[in-house]
Image (cartoon, rainbow, N blue to C red; front, side, top):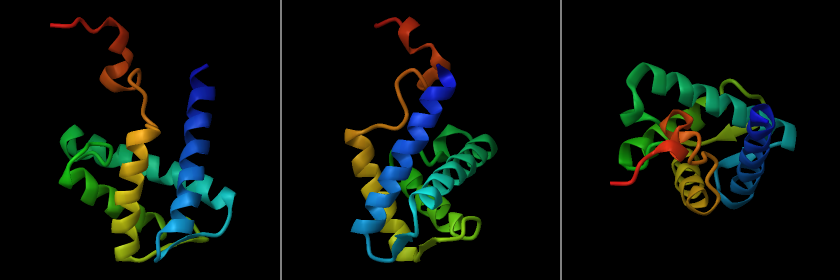
Length: 124
């Protein structure tokens, strides 16, 4: 079940990247498979940054630092994934659009937060 959840998240992230490529100038994705690979690379880069610097600088963290880190991660992805091209302004706009989309379609679930113990969390 966990693997299926990750697959669905990457597919949703790829669809979001395709939509952002359609919407944002300076941001292009050549195919769905490129978007899927870019989604995996973005997740891995985000994981590495979070492991190195902690949750406060995480691209998944809300706020200006998370926004800028997300834009940097998106910009760096173009050097790893062929068929994925983005300008600096495109990365900033994409980070903004992805953040807005994430408000309505969160890619991280509540179970992923707090190491999977969100159901055991007590209200105060």
